[in-house]
Length: 174
Image (tube, rainbow, N blue to C red; front, side, top):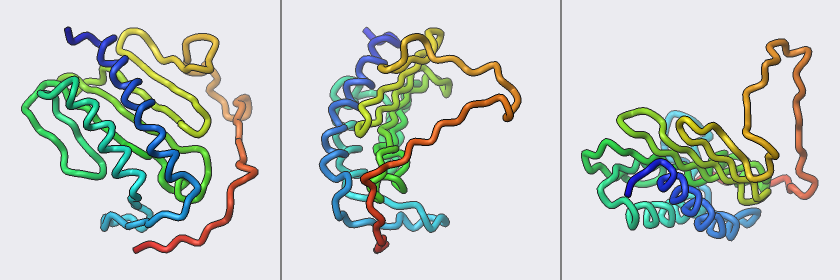
């Protein structure tokens, strides 16, 4: 049965099962290709492609009639009211430089409205998810995630996490 809870469970598992593929390429010398868009920094790597394939195969196995919008390959269009959106390596800029802040993002829309979303940072093992009507959560959060009521920058708290092991890398874009 298709319920938002089932969709969420499948999205979480898809992200978690794809994460070893992303980590296999992380902080390694890999071929970087520019996608050919107007942005100079629109890169794709084998990590993006293979992580995306793993996610797509998992989603198609469970929901063969759903649409899937892909970042690295041709999208799957089945005239469904359900559309999955996948960003296999969000923040490729950090990924190719060996910085840990990157994520696998999977979301599902029903009739162009968000239903569920999952973001998994495999480097830090941080999983965040949201479900329509049930809020947003994180595996390391002690309670439901909420938007701050602070509306003045001078009262806000910002956190910057630096990567002590990140190496400076010269990028060769092919």
